[in-house]
Image 1 (spheres, rainbow, N blue to C red):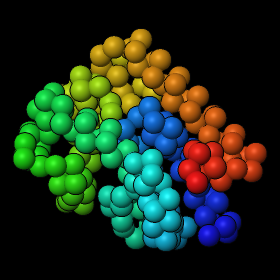
Image 2: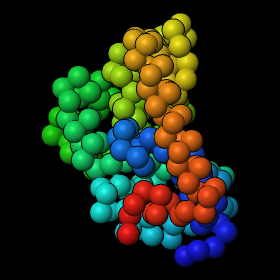
Image 3: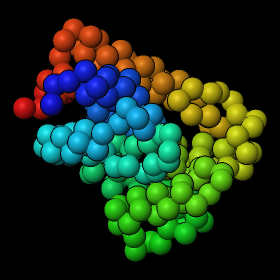
Image 4: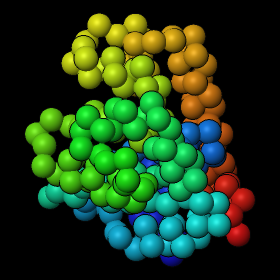
Length: 189
């Protein structure tokens, strides 16, 4: 499937999810216009990227937008099994017995049923727990630093992480501009 729309999808994927595609983040979100989205893109990506443990899941679809979660299955499962992460998730109805797939389904339901975005999503996106808790406690205000997320804890660590994420984005987007497709750039045959 080498058409212009798929190439545009790959470019958006590289821009919005590069840290997860390159393995330094367990998951990333991407929102795209529904009229530029085709579920065949997911089927193709999920089939080819499975060898790297990468997967894309539709979290929410409305008339205008599609919210996608790109994740590394092993890294996300490990993240969601951490006790400090489970402690936050319990508050929002995620049972300790839920595996990663069940947690993703619960998140999807919470996105669909709430007017307020479910802020526990930060746990899924590999944000530091103290920052997720700080965001929830302070309603998104009183943060120390704002980058890929709002920081309430360690700003030095967060700034380094933001810089690493920017390097990932720059590298992957550069590879696509040079003519590689996403699979070649990620060394997926």
